[in-house]
Image (cartoon, rainbow, N blue to C red):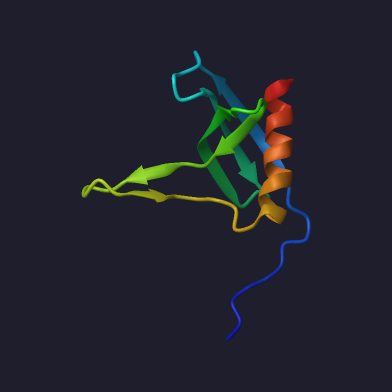
Length: 93
């Protein structure tokens, strides 16, 4: 049984930006958004890059044993780059 279906037109909406005082790790804010009216993704970090500019870091969870795991993330650059580009353009406004 096939359980996948293509989403042809992804849409990002309800973008919320929370700037903070920059940290020693380069975090300058947090961003939350709704993806295709299907998922609400909260608390993505906006981080400065060493070579200039910004990147998006998706939420992590620390388990009781101390291990850190990804909570949500794009599965490919083809998906992740357009999302990151849009979100960072909203932040830079």
